[in-house]
Image (cartoon, rainbow, N blue to C red; front, side, top):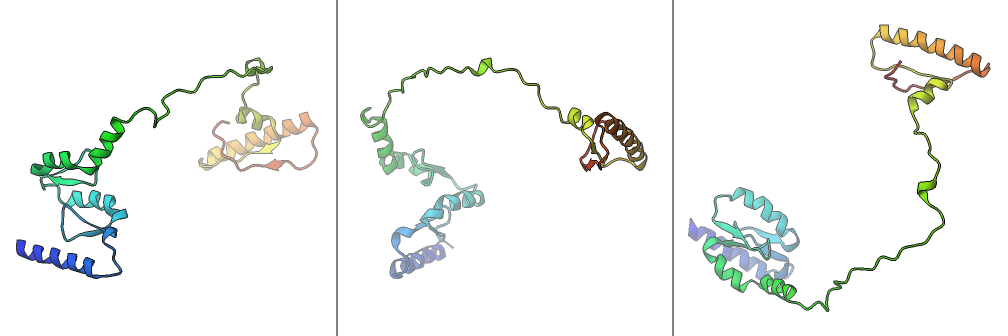
Length: 181
């Protein structure tokens, strides 16, 4: 079985190297299954999916680069030679000249207006507004008996509003849900 996978690996490598349409840098070999050749830009996504299929393999992730999947016995050697470790060490020991570590100063702005001195405005309550507005309401999602009772109360409310406002024209209708009666 091992010889067959080795032959497949050699064949894949030959195909990738011999084909002028597939540059070497575009594809990466999967650490879980050597027969998988993945586009470099899709490699991290592939590793997530492939690692779910190979949970029992003794592989570990490099702390400096998540796409480095290594066999457990080789981890110590990899940590000493990892290219991304060098980048980490350079960033860790770099001088403060590269990074701006000085916090910006706070400059107060003098203005004449204070938002705290604005007049207090009452909050808008849609139920209070609709009870005083000449708009027919419609009760949705209730039993026919409750709808009839609501309709009778609504007609009475509209008559009193018409009398108070002195309206003789048709009143607007609204098909909004009303929970309170």
